[in-house]
Length: 258
Image (cartoon, rainbow, N blue to C red; front, side):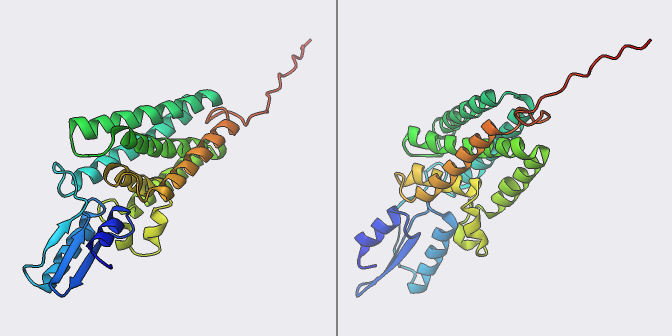
């Protein structure tokens, strides 16, 4: 980086995780633990190679009540599980297409507002503008739930199984929430950012700590999952055990037996 100001701007814009600045007076390291506690720790260890007195500045630190980021990572998984189950339950219990559409939208709004209150006001482990954080959480919840319901609408119970495996089991493993996608084997770390959990975690970090910087891809990914899932919900089967839209059941003729 040309200077400390340029390095800090790149960190706040989520273009880099940190920077090592070397000048005639010595070296200094700038990190952002809010972007990735794991990368921040690696850069801090690297600073020791320049000497024990090398200064390390945390430009965007984690919340004081969550200094290791465990609350952020641990609090995100329950919402993912709840959203997956919400999509399954809507598929199983709500037969009408419009009713499922409304149920999914309602769940997304309520989940976002509720989880934001819990993490910001009750547990007090997440900073940032309340509405921005709630919107990020709500979009993620809607994307995962509607994707599950949409898959069920076109693939029946096989869609639920496919969604659970790809979006939850695989998606959670490749999300890099506790570390960073770049620390995972490639290209799998990048693949994880195109699945709801990875995109949701990135969006929440951006909303809570970086004033929305670096959120464009995550918003696009989650919006696509939500939009396609809702569309499939509207055009697919009326119910998980029902018949495709447009089919009718013939009434058998009564036959008199002499």
